[in-house]
Image 1 (spheres, one colour):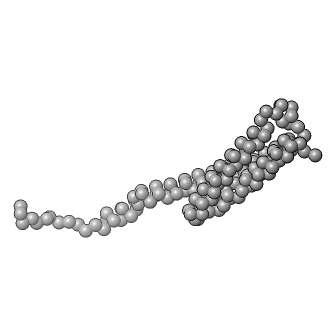
Image 2 (cartoon, helix red, strand yellow; image 1 turned 45 degrees about the vertical axis):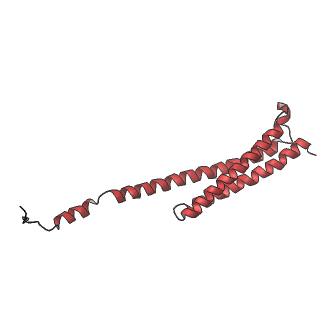
Length: 144
């Protein structure tokens, strides 16, 4: 049977795991929407922000439950497996986050390259445009 402290931590660990899994899902949603649907991408990123805020509160609650406990008791057999499990889920969420960052940077770089190419004059088109410009002859001015 778990102690009251372990039970209290277990409730928060389960909430943290749920939020971390939700965070991972929103990261995948953002990656899926990247470059395809800006509205969905922004919605997924905003939802991740909301989940992160909620997760911060849960992590704070876990820290408060563990606060004031002797160091040898913090690693007792009841709470250690709970914390190991939340760490495993957090690692998966972090991996999803890193994937989202990498994919977002790739999309940013792709769009920057497109913009750069769009703003750069087309040398071939300018060359042909110059070759076909009508020749201007002397201009007659009635005013002098």
